[in-house]
Structure formats: structure tokens, C-alpha cells
Image 1 (cartoon, rainbow, N blue to C red):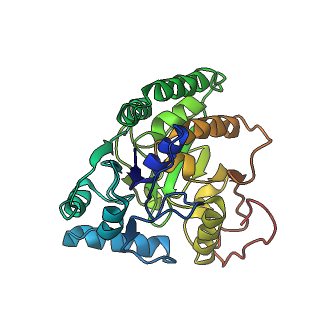
Image 2 (image 1 turned 90 degrees about the horizontal axis):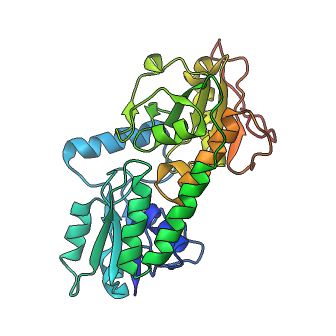
Length: 308
């Protein structure tokens, strides 16, 4: 079976089930250099504030954020196309995919991932397994992931109050599966409820948390550190908010899409909330902000992991 994926969650789940897609989206991990099936209409290198502005302007005008490369999709002739219907900012919507399929001589079967809560991960895995003829492998993987979650240590007492920021300028509190991820890791989440959409807030509306987690959608740890450094250099609000709180920068990969990596993310947060060491330096780093009350420009501390 020839399978193409238009969303990172689909690509990661396919590989977890032992299937390499014939084509992927522009935002999927693509070390093999597979054909790319989508492109973003928002240029690279923009600030978070500018990205947010352009996204909201596109919504107001009814414009799409992505384009499916129909000619590439047609040439690959996949039997199955994996898409998503959760987030219009993350990947092409079903409407955009449908428009592309209208021009194909032979349309593939389409499997739409719709997980919004942590438990939906297992349902999506099983649905993908059935579509691939690998239902047994999918069930075995789902059970293994459930076993890892069941083996987590009990939460600390009392649970630390946690804020999870998936965007900085402006701040967005993570939603969908993030509340359950934080709760399973041992935290008391101060944000949207399970399954609810991420919520934009003003800096003054941010809850009084003890632990602040920063995992910006689409950003690796290094990119997140650079975004925070630029924000603080402009005298941004984050420095004052973080005073007196524990804060961590995170690679967003385990949290921005609902995949087997999300279970690894729960384990990572459990270690962070317990103050355990031995963290993978590519996945998480403490964030220390010094001398920010006066909002003077804040130089990036070269060579000091997790410090801005």
C-alpha cells in the first residue's frame, strides 16, 4: 500500500507502525528527503507576533494557510492519504484536501485524524492500523503506550500549579490533550479543560502558576530559546511573569501533535515537576531570567543551556 501523509501526527504514527510514507507535508520530519506535498503561505523567519497577525488576517479574509501540491500528489498516486481535522493552523484542512483531490484522476482513500484528547490517540492508532492492514501492530502499540502511562509514579502532593504556553507573542494556553498530559504528569493545570481548544490570553490574565512550561508549536528547543531571547530583548512581559516561578523550555514535538511521542512527553513532564535531573538536553532546559524588572534589553547568554 502506498501511503501519503499531510500532517506530522500521521507521519509519526505511520512510522511507529513500520510504514514509511511515499510523501509528507512540509512540516513533517523528513530526513529521507521524501516528496513534499504541502507548502505554507506564511513565510519563514517571521516573529511569533507577525505569524499570529498573519494567521488572524487570513481567517478574517477566509484565506487558507496552506496549499496542497496537487501535481506531486497525483504523481505519487497514493492508495491512502492521512490528514487531520483538528487545527487549521497546523496543517491543511479537510476542505483544502478535498479541493486538491478533485483534480486527481484516481482519488485515494482518506483517513482523517481527529484526536482532541489523550485517549483519542489510541483510537486514531487503531483506525490507522485497520486502514493499513496492521491492526495487530496498532493494538500492540496502543497497549504498550497505555502501560507506560499506567506505570507513572504517583503525583507529588500537593500538585504544583502549572501553566503551559504553546505560543509567546501573544500568549496561548495549551488545550486539547495538554490538560490531561499535565495532569498525568502530576500537575494541576491552570488552562483550558480537556479537549478544549487552546486559548489566547493577555499577559495580565495569565494564572498564578508555580511551574511554567514553554513549548511553542513548531519550535525545537533551540528555536524556542531564540524566540524567548528576542522577546526579552524587546522588554517583553515574560521576564516579570517568571520571577519566583520554575520555568522550562521544551521541544514542542511531543506536545504539538497527538502521537506516541506524547506519551514520552508525559514522562518528561513528570520528571520536571518532581525536580528530577538527567534530562535530555535536546528535549528540555530550565529557563532562568535575570534582572528583568526594569525591562532593559536582555542579551542572550552564549553557551549557557536554558539561560537567557
